[in-house]
Image (cartoon, rainbow, N blue to C red; front, side, top):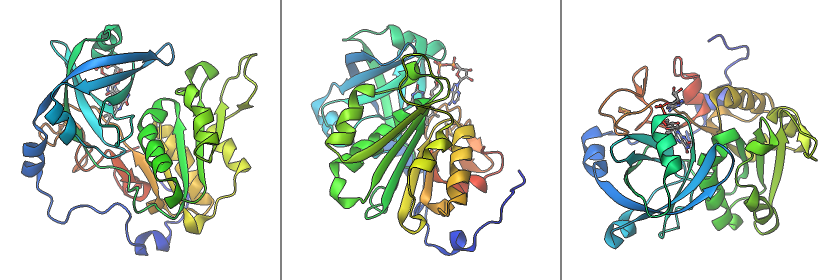
Length: 304
Ligand SMILES: Cc1cc2nc3c(=O)[nH]c(=O)nc-3n(C[C@H](O)[C@H](O)[C@H](O)COP(=O)(O)OP(=O)(O)OC[C@H]3O[C@@H](n4cnc5c(N)ncnc54)[C@H](O)[C@@H]3O)c2cc1C
Ligand code: FES
């Protein structure tokens, strides 16, 4: 890909936010993550015509206690007899009672899942992958930006910021979808704004007669906020085409690429560095990612 702008010097010189373990041992990761948690679906909430939110409870209380994840990580969800799919965790990492997964009906396995009722049993492996560097983002202004289904992986960092609200400065959520009917988690917007002092801006590409809000592309929302590039971090979740536009726009506003974090999705099989299905060049999206800083993604051939 030909870049139409100069790569900034400060991106290279700044200490990276996403630090990787110096001695990376795939075998240890496999040993830690080969366990299958048996879960029960305890609640199903219909969010839109395509997406449902599933509450899963790990059946064994001891296993429930040890299951811990960080915002940005994903699980492999198994529908017995049908298949296994990678799904980002949408809940708070403090919630020990149940795990929330927001799932779009896409193909074979997710279609079966959408027919599942309360009480159905599923398997869960994980959590897998890298996470957003929430602690390192403390004392910065935070931009949480999502397009469409991207609000599902973004919801865990939103919970984190809400639960540690005093550690962060100004927090903005920018959310865009194609149509108003595709907006996820609308029932939480008021709470995010009023209780958690978060400024939420939404926009749709194609409005209908009932939509009172903004119309246009998500980058339009940047006109309404002031970004201090020296003290801001951004998490961007959505389709690659969207985060490419958003990150390039943020870069033109002065935000260094190593302070923008994205979640890169690839087709996955094992989720733990065994099958090579998710590889981009020599990078395993499942264990080296899915969360990367944008600087890393831009240097990853054919990542976006
Ligand atoms: C790290 C990660 C996190 C994810 N988080 C979520 C989430 O929170 N919620 C959610 O609904 N989905 C999420 N996905 C996508 C989800 O895994 C796929 O939609 C699912 O695997 C489709 O399985 P299926 O058997 O229903 O469909 P298939 O029959 O396998 O495929 C149906 C269609 O979906 C496409 N597809 C399958 N997997 C992917 C993928 N990884 N990326 C893009 N297109 C794909 C196929 O090309 C095909 O067109 C995530 C994927 C990854 C890799
Ligand atoms: S999904 Fe198997 S190696 Fe990444």
